[in-house]
Amino acid sequence: MSSNRSLTRRNFLVGASTLLALPILGAVPDICARRQRSCIIIGSGLSGLGAAYHLSRAGWHVTILEARDRVGGRVFSRHMGGENLVCEMGAEWVGNEHERVRALCKSLGIGLQRHQFQNERLLQNGHVSAPGKLETRFTPQGRAAWETFTKKFHSYSLEQQKWMDRFDWWTWLRNIGMPEQDIRLRDLSDSTDFGETIRDLGAFVGANEYISTAASPTDWMDMKMIGGNARLPQELAHRIGREHIHLNTPVHEIKQGRGLVSVRSGEKVWKADAVICTAPTRSLTQIHFDPPLPSAQFNAANQLQYGRIVKTAVLYDERFWKQDDFSLVTDTSSHYIFHATQNQKGKQGILTSYATGDKADVLASQDETRRMKIVAQELAPVDERTPQLARAVTSIPWQRDRWTQGAYAIYKPGQWFTLRPILSRPHGKVLFAGEHLADWQGFMEGAAETGEAAANALLGK
Ligand SMILES: Cc1cc2nc3c(=O)[nH]c(=O)nc-3n(C[C@H](O)[C@H](O)[C@H](O)COP(=O)(O)OP(=O)(O)OC[C@H]3O[C@@H](n4cnc5c(N)ncnc54)[C@H](O)[C@@H]3O)c2cc1C
Image 1 (cartoon, rainbow, N blue to C red):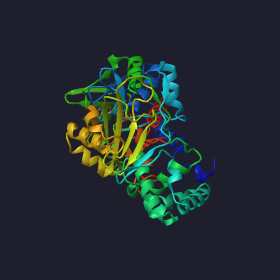
Image 2: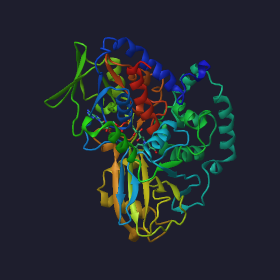
Image 3: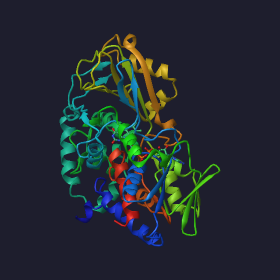
Image 4: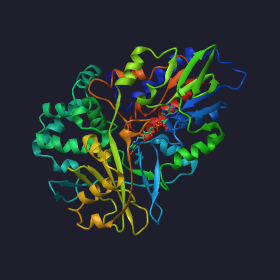
């Protein structure tokens, strides 16, 4: 692997797991090999469950402490209507390249079904365009600028990647010669992937998402789990053993001493040989560490923000949108709307709005009924009956979620190469995992990958 590829977004984990493994190997040799080893895992999202699954299969005693009243974290399905249609409030898509998640689904007997949306419509200024790929909507000048930059980007050295990352993605696109109208289009589309406007996104992170050799033609929007993505955390929890999972148990303190780590929630204390902490950084900074986290690590956790996303799933009495792969990028608050019940039989159907950034904050401050009215009304240019056909709603404003305060981490200009390596460092016998540390950052795959890497570090693999 050449040095300029060694820290790209998609292959970082090779480096990250090495980073993770080296210090921890120094930290745990005193764990007695003859008795059963134990680990406390903070958080029952896919990273925590993934870590616990690996450790318990290797004979470790695991205890999972979860703040919420359910497992799964940001993987959360809901059912709506008499036809029991399922929609996703958190993670929606499994990409073809998401090998770990696909392998887990296979081994746990969870089927995957197609969930692709490649030809989206565009709703701008009240007009709806015919379906088409984003690239076809750019000006010839914008397309030429993009192609020229794409060729250059593949040969960027690590130093050039770091220099690039000091810019935001919007400014970078302007500097490579994209006309303003094309950048606005990219902003509408790319902000769906990152949860914030591209004015807030590091340019390297943006380029790597869309141009790297690992970039996906479908943007990793390929499949979903039959019956709902929440089946994956539920199956994992079942295999690990529900008796090892404590719900409604927010961790307040992590203390290390005398070869053990003790973890406190309220008055209750658990002790183990090691801890894997998967709390998103906004929550991590609320945990009291003794000895304290190094200030660089605490500050990195404090600086990392999470994208503002509101998912609003509206159940309609009929599928007026006709195409099973209906999707629409809008200049309104609903932002991106897609058919959530693709490949699910029923007369009724669900369209989910995926609002990001400032638009998401507008929706977040409304109650759910008003959210439904806004989203349904904004669809009137597609079919004027939408306000009358809207029957029920369910939604989550992730930026108001107590335990995440956003949907997934957004690495701002200059943060990708600086904050993430610091956040990945073990603190004594406490290892860190979670989507925000992953090569596949922002994906279930990333969560599963970091959980496995943390478990492997403890297993000495
Ligand atoms: C709106 C949205 C859309 C998404 N779309 C996709 C997608 O299409 N495809 C995809 O692959 N991924 C998607 N993701 C991302 C994916 O859901 C995450 O990357 C992944 O689920 C994160 O898993 P995790 O284990 O890192 O974190 P979480 O799932 O957040 O797990 C961490 C757990 O820690 C718990 N916790 C926090 N603090 C404490 C504490 N102090 N004590 C105890 N427990 C604590 C939390 O309650 C939580 O359950 C999406 C996410 C969101 C929100």
